[in-house]
Length: 225
Image (cartoon, rainbow, N blue to C red):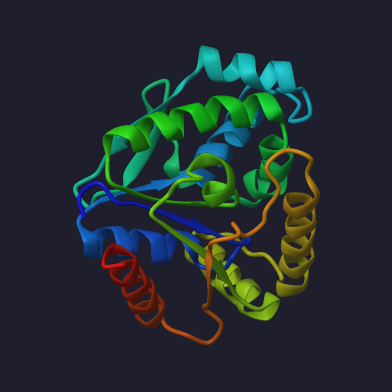
């Protein structure tokens, strides 16, 4: 399975990154968090005072400060910008608030999609995001649409932020996630949607191990079809 490609799409807080990392580890292939790449652009915009609705400015920023991916011992990637590891800053509320607007810009998406597709040509990979199975890897061997109830997604995101030292009320998080869903699903370019041939997996009330086991079973079925 060294060259298999797996696309995991789904809404904010469904557990995509956690599950995708675990699936990649189990299969011995690489994991690429495409959402973190868009978050890095939002972080860059904040650092350089570029309006996130200034598409030419964002594209110029990416050319001037390209993202560099450095593989870790666990098979994931750390994102560096200008020699700085920016990964610890990518889940902050300030970045989360702006990332959907960044991701809606066609020029930004084109550039990052090119990088992601180039990466997949050379590696077996698990990618997660919102348009992996529909746009980035439309020919992926396995396509998963991972979902969960809003309440579950709020609880997970609240716990994640608390562990990082950010205090955000669950009511505020619910509003933020619902708005993120609306923006992601209604954007003109590469909206959040399940690929026609994606398998649905609901993670509500289930452990990471249970969800990973279901996805690995799907992978096994596909490989032996």
